[in-house]
Every structure is written in C-alpha cells, then in structure tokens.
Amino acid sequence: MSAVVAPAADDAAAVDDLLAQTRAARVYDVAHESALEAAPLLSARLGRPVLLKREDQQPVFSFKLRGAYNRMVQLDPAQRARGVIAASAGNHAQGVALAAAKLGIRATIVMPVTAPQVKVDAVRRFGGAMVEIVLAGDSYSDAQAAAAQLQAEHGATFVHPFDDLAVIAGQGTVALEILHQHPGPLHAVFVPVGGGGLLAGVAACIKALRPEVKVIGVQALDADAMTRSLEKGSRVALDEVGLFADGTAVKQVGALTFALCRQHVDAMLRVDTDAICAAIRDIYQDTRCVPEPSGALALAGLKQYVATRAHLGEQAADGALVAIVSGANMNFDRLRFVAERAEVGEQHEAVFAVTIPEERGSFRRFCAALGRHSITEFNYRIGDASSAHIFVGVQIASRDEREALAAAFRAQAFDVLDLTDDELAKLHLRHMIGGRSPLARHERLYRFEFPERPGALTHFLGQLHPDWNISLFHYRNHGADYGRILVGIQVPPEEYALLPPFLAALGYPHWDESDHPAYRLLLRE
Image (cartoon, rainbow, N blue to C red):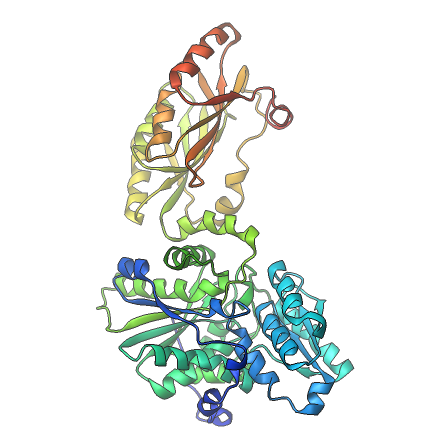
C-alpha cells in the first residue's frame, strides 16, 4: 500500500469551494442516485460488511455522465454555439454524448482505437446526430493530444474527463450520496483511479464531512500514474499503460486532481489483472451484474486491503467498507478471459507443469497424487521417449493446499514447476501444448463426455487401459454439466479388436475422431 505524501500548504487554494460546487452540481438532470447495496456473499467471506456503490446502473452504465453534464450545462450561449470536444477511452465519451443530445450541443469526441466497441457503439447511440466520433491513438493520452489539435483548429470548448473543477464536482456527488445512504460507521471508501477525477471529488467531499473515513484509491498495476505521482510528490508521466482496465488507462493524471488527491487521499493500492478478474466475478455473484475491469478495480483493492491487514494480524476496524463499482461497459468477448483468470486471482486454481517418466504406472501415480482434487485443465502431448510433460490446472482452497499438492507430486519423484503466477504460461503456453509427434505411432483419437462432478476426471483417468500409452490428452473445465475430453491412445493394429469392448466397458459416450481433417492436418504425423 502506498501512503500519500503530505500536501504543500497552498495546494488546495484554488479549490476551497469544491464542496459547495458539488452540492450545487446539476447532475440529476441526467443521472440518478445510484444504489448502495450490501454484498452478502463477499461480506460473509471477508468477515466485514462490504457495500457496493452501483454507478454501473447509471443511464450510460458509468459515473462519468455526472461530471460531463455538470460541465456542459454551465457553458454560456456562445460556448454552446461553438460546440464541445472531448477525449475519452469510452465512459466519459458516453457522458458527453448524452449531455450533448440533452442540451442540443454539437460534440466531437476523440476515442483511442483501442476503445471497446461496446463503448464506441454506445457513444453513437446516446449522441445521435449531435456527435461526431474520431478514432485516434492507442490510449486516452493519445486521444487527448489529437483532441487538443482539433480544438485549436475549431475553437470548441474542451470538456476534460477529469482535470476540471466542474467535472470533479459532478463526480463528487457520488460521495455525498454514500454519506447520505450510510450515516452509520464507515471505515473506508475504495475508489478506482485513472486520471483522478472521481477520487479527487470523492476524497475532498468525504474529508470535509467525515474526516475519520479513509479514502483509498485503487489502480491497475500497469496503469498506476496517480500512485507513482503521489509517491514521488509530483506528477509522473508513464511511457505506456496497460489496456485491460481501459477505463483507467491514463498516462498522466491532472494537475487539479493530483493536488486534491495529495491533500485528501489516505492511501493508494495497486492490483493485478487476476485480482481484477476475481473482483468481477465477486460482483457478479452478489449482484448478477458484470462490471467492466475498471469497474471492479475498487473491489479488488478492498479485498487486498482486508487480506493485508489480516496477514499482518491487525484488528478489523469498525465500520463498513465501500467499493465504488464505476462502470459496466464490458465487451462480451472479454468474458472468457475474465472467467479463465478469476480462479487464479482468487487463489482457487493452481497451475503446474509436471514431468513424469514415460513408463508403465507413472500416469497412475500421477493420478494418485492428484487425489480427489477437481481438475480444471489437463494438457499433454507425447514428445519425448523418456519423459512426459503435463500441464495441469487444479482447483484449490488456499495457497497452503497448492504447496501441499506440489509436495505430493515431488513425493512421487516427479519434477514440478509451479506456474500459478507465471503470466506467459497463463496467457499463452496453456493453449500451445501439442503439435505433431513422431512418437505418436498407431494413435487413435477419441472424444469423450462424462457428467461433470468432483473427482469425475480422476475416475476417468483411472479407467484407461493400463497397457496402451496415452499420447495426447486435453481437458478444460468450463463449468458445464458435462466434461469433454480429447484423448490420443496408442493401440497397435493387432490389438484393434480390443478397442470396442474396452470403450464399451468405460461406459462414457465417445466418438472416434481419428480421421478428423483438422487432426490429420495439425496433430497426426
């Protein structure tokens, strides 16, 4: 956790009336007071009352319309006639688009080419004929540079996504709602951070009204401009930012937001992609809604905060913990990745590369070491005459269980490589096990299905023919009713007659895929 540097004496001179501006903000022409909901499943698991501030329920599925509208509604007639220009990775753009349509102001919105398509489409839908979209650059900062050039050419008013007092005041209304909705004991509010507009507004208001409440900012590990800036005591410009949490992918925070955060924020946290994915799943399990990665940042930080305090043996302080769910503009095609990584982020899946000897009985010893653990993934392709390299994912309950499983493999004299925290293995190598092999002679390929339940895969493995070598194996648990397995079995031609009775004895639905064209092209020697 990064503590915030003490502020200079005159840092807040220009923002003394921010609380008054926030109270007067015109956000409710377009926004509504979002729910502050209990998260009962997560609260029970953490042993602390956890509340979710549901900004994902706003008309644009994000808090950003608060600040955008509050800024645009204050434009004078001449400014409205010249129109506005904005730069945004997506959520601010939607707020500007909705405000433009509501107020009858023409808007040019520059978005990075990496902006999720769901956000680009939403800007068109909310803005209609009042909005023109320009795609430029790979991040918000690139889009901002392009917008500045367009502004200089056309004289439009720039509606900044975070470094503007009217925008910050609009975002600060989130804090006023939290304090109104939960007047009881409140320990900390966790806020997602990109450029710092939401954090600055929330922190300034909470510290003015309830100074005992901690305000903690949360950033993605690969987009931590505010954290680095507060650590250094001056604004830092990042060379690159990660784009998974695209809504907070900002290379440099604002001057105003930095000054406010320097004065009012208690601490900053960094979280990785796996922790964000686990938080997305947590929010879904408690609400049945799916936030975008940036929308789950605050909860990922909240969980890290609780875990760190527990690890240090600190007593849990009184009061609820609030996480602001800032948005839900998730591209549907990201869900597979999120589901894949959530298990690891929650330390519920361990991933190993295990080397076993290519000899009779070693595969059974490997299955015995697995025991009754639920297997989430199993990849193997014969490639060495002396040893077999298996990529296996296993469901676990804790880090201790992960270490015990590794010890069980080593007790069988197997070499073990723990890949649970290895980014390359989780992102790429797990999908690349296979290929042609000159050792896969007389290979028959079969596809099996079996009812998915704990221990089902281990039972299947134990039923395989002891005298036939397994040359290929692929299984991935997708949470469905049925498990699906692809198996390569090396059966000498003179033993083909034994195959039908063996398959019948297994008792699983199966299909012979030995002549499948893709298999013949990619895997068969």
